[in-house]
Length: 156
Image (cartoon, rainbow, N blue to C red; front, side, top):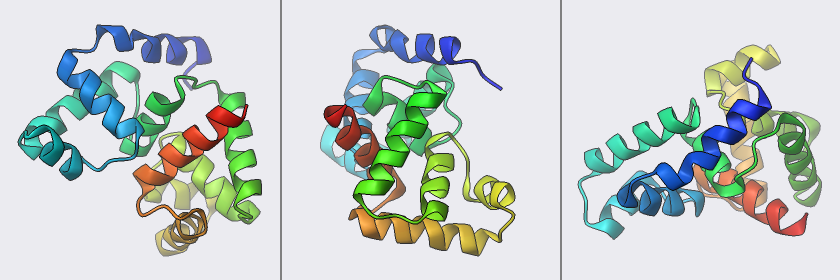
């Protein structure tokens, strides 16, 4: 498993991002989709996707929601992620299963990985995630990751 020190140093390398990557990272942290970013920056979606892949590689993120969460918080320590998710779940009255699901999501797990971890079907894991998104008023997993980071980051 990856250590907290290496994760934090990866995210702190944001100053090494190119100007285009910084613009994309800022919009990702706000919860914008790749399509919205491409339209807003007047870039091809594949170009934005290439920058996102490089951002994921540089930060050590495995999935897009994990990248969004890391960029939005700037903190990635395991204990801190758990605290942010717990507080978010309490505020939005999520069940324990929904809180666990979103916690796994922002830690870089795919739906398949979440289902495997929970011992449930992918359909069940997706339903838990969709219900959590609905309760939080997030239209996508990216918005959910951004909302977890921003609402709790400012409250702490």
